[in-house]
Image 1 (cartoon, rainbow, N blue to C red):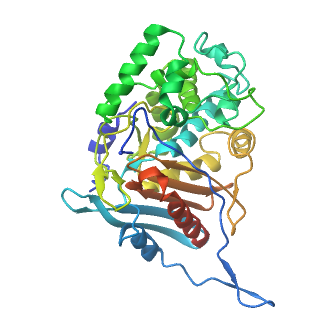
Image 2: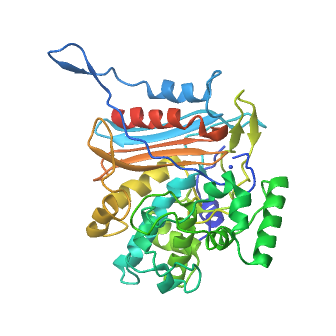
Image 3: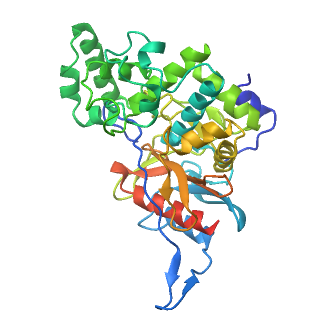
Length: 398
């Protein structure tokens, strides 16, 4: 097993994190695609003019409506391959964004977690129908009701950490253990004072264990980052080794990825673009190191090109067998994907923290892929729609 630093020192290219309230972490959205075909009249259709991809990236990072200091994008498809960059990677020294810049993938990391669980099932080490109690006895009072598949598909009914952020006092009041409630209350106050304060994801899980399920498992949908942190613990317990080692052994090293690492919290190891929270007036705050309480839900750091390499390899059966790829496209993760508006269903994710925004789409067979990475995000996620639109237009131009 190699560390990121070892891979980088062996020759990875040089590259030039959510101002958070208490306990805040990444929020993720999934958005359907839009068509790039324009109707010229009632009798025929003509293809839209070729997309100026560089101009699209430039528009994301310049002017009064900019949504980040810098951006990178990678796309590949029937019209070839394109890799681009725009803007600035580090506002402190003005270093330009480079196409190989590494950034936090935020919730796009959940695809990596899902791939790990699929591989462990393929290897006969677990079943997606196993309960949490099977692998982590006593962790959750309802652990015998929730399956791995339900955690993957957000149908477990577990609370999300964003729910807690919106009403922390109510959730803390539900904690029946006075000593734990006191520790969690102190932790919240410390994070309020220092958003970069690091803490392990287990504290989210211990808080969630005292919250009622939002519905009977398998009967509804509620996004839960905490559920993915439970999945990370399951994967590590099943395999008998740390989650980071699993990422390297099963996903990163087999593909020869040298700019990709499981690096979930605190300062990012190795070269990377700094991340920024943008106020409504576009004033930027460096939040690169602000990533507390994050693990399996959002721990991957990568470049756009290597993110695309992972996605295409996954869809082409290079990481899990075809049966598990099909399961991920269907009931195990994506439930059929999103309408791309140009090339059938697309399978992807959208991740956002205060300092980074990531959008990805890949076709079911891996022949078309697009990744957009931004080293900034407007407060409250108000720039997310623009990032998704950029992804859709680039994907349909691929």
